[in-house]
Image (cartoon, rainbow, N blue to C red; front, side):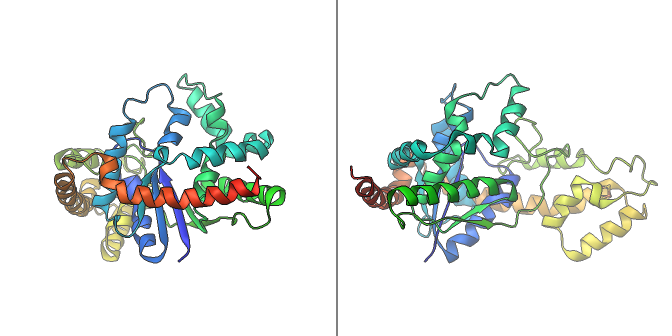
Length: 330
Ligand code: SF4
């Protein structure tokens, strides 16, 4: 079976943006491919190196959320990046052949650096500049054919492909495959204020949110700003609430909302109540599964939960690293 590799930084519990943007796709991919999903804890350090105190706990919580979302530990190999030193060895070797200019031209590099400098964060560290190289080693160490990504991450995959070509050119034509981007369907899921859903904007709907809080969040959620009064017609395409309807509501409901909104026949609260019933169903079902998962792993730390998978990933990486060392004549 073709191999798929994907990782997620352990920033803590997951919100619905993580679920619909990535995890839901992982659940499907695990049925069709040999999947390796990893906790990208070293990647967390590229931007948050000054405080590592939450990484371990965040990693555990995140993996339990994955499992409650339907990632099956018997189907996909789930592992922790920092417990697999071969990633760092390959990262070091790739660093030797990576021109700095390739990294500096990555669009996300300047964008994130500038964005975070507004909050007083200086991302001039080498680890942040080099994270696409670490990402490349995460991928090619497992001979991944596909990497599920959103359109914004395509330049990283292109960089990985360039690095593979360069490495193969220097040390052996067929050492690595060029990974391909697997563009996943990820619907737009804005935060409740209409901006990108993010912990730092305090605008997320968390998978673990208390359902009463979810009700409050949705009822006060931003709408099309043209609908100041009930008699003002609106445009669902300009409304973040309708982005949620596209995920949760059935066709008939969406038609009803489009007609009601554009013709000012329904109020925003009516519209939000329809969404709420679906969202609450979804969250309660997730939360019930999460309680079962939490109970079944109550006394285990993350390594104990993932031990078999961790060893599988380690062995695969070890045998690939052996070939790489041979190619470099070490
Ligand atoms: S009726 Fe619904 S889609 Fe239209 S503005 Fe209000 S919340 Fe948004």
